[in-house]
Figure 1: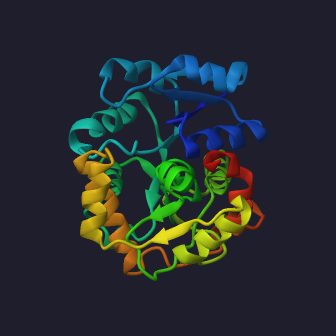
Figure 2 (figure 1 turned 30 degrees about the horizontal axis):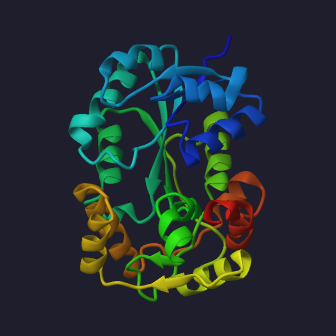
Length: 285
């Protein structure tokens, strides 16, 4: 029997799409996340489900046993990479994982303060084969991280100024990850993944307004006000700090580059922002 492809964070927006796309291509999948019951509820008998928690080393052995290739990601709440993620990378290496596909961040070379950079660096240090999917901002951030402000306040609250973002849909990331995990020839490669259009947040808000049939306003706070308000709204200090850093980098053009990697690797054009809003509109109603 072929070894399963391990998908860490299978209940997340991207992880779930990776699972879906691998299964559609006939792959064998082991899904891992903190709640096994939710994994079984979501994916049924099509996968092997295991409990995995970055901070619980007792979950490592079952998770990594017999795995050669895995999809690996950083949960948003984890910022201390040395304490909370390095042990799992070491365990994966000891268990025989040889190829890690890591969900990273576009422009990582210029944003070395973000946790993704530390993960990339450590994976290189322990000498496993890697493919880094360096993604632009997920469209799905708007129906998760920013869902409440859009649904309840009819606003997008980010400190990006006039900068444009080549948003990418998590479904496209999942499609690319499946290709990279199932086909040979991608080890040692890094892919900058973006959508096929650049939008500023006024344009994004206008599209949302048209689809949702109510006015969505782009509030454009300065980074300090964003940081303070984000904490007041209940976000942890470290997560608010990382968000502020990422959006400030976007303000200075980090998310502006646009590539054709999604189409080249999957054979189809990326999902457009308007289509994303139509598909997810119930999240903001």
